[in-house]
Length: 240
Ligand code: GLP
Image (cartoon, rainbow, N blue to C red; front, side, top):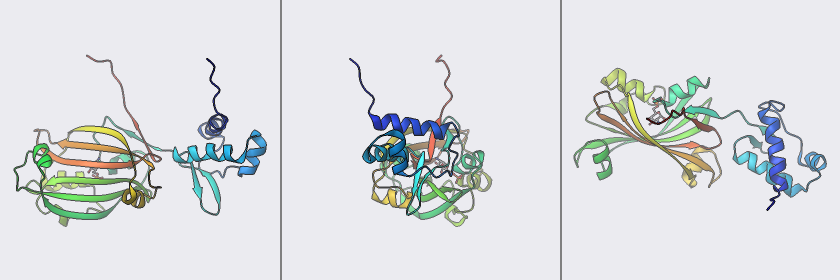
């Protein structure tokens, strides 16, 4: 059986190749739809489909009233290293930022009690932050820390300082190990608004339980990373 690759995919790959080879560096305005129609001998709808795919993959971005541009390369996140958001952005040459959306002290749920080794009735800080790289939204973080381990955490500058640094420097809680899962998900309305993506855009859900060297669980976090801004890299070894 021979399968013909749909024309829009062929065009998409041809355009992606121009971006990835550096022929069209970040910031380049790509030719107008009608020019691509002539170049590829395809319909406007086909060209649009190819471009839409590249926009949702994060290779292109549309600027209203101006055109379609080659996006900045994705942030390459080493998923096998325990890094704070601040360190991840700096490694990539981006200025890390945080906007605190809410800080609350709430009783730990059953699930949090289990994960963080707490008793029912114990309190946790629930901190929601929008994280940025060079002022562009990258991730939405929902982090939880037991109040008894870091009382007064809410009084620190959670916008300007790395939480992992605060935990280490102010409470002697250096996080050295974490269990983490990554799974794809779609942006719901609130997340889409905060992250500046369309509703239903692809996101990566990153769930982490982080420990000190003595095995004390200190943080449980659920982060949503923009699928068009970040990709994850892992180093593989043979088992055994
Ligand atoms: C990453 C982790 C979060 C953690 C955050 C701390 O995003 N996935 O679980 O809360 O880093 O970042 P920072 O120390 O920059 O505040």
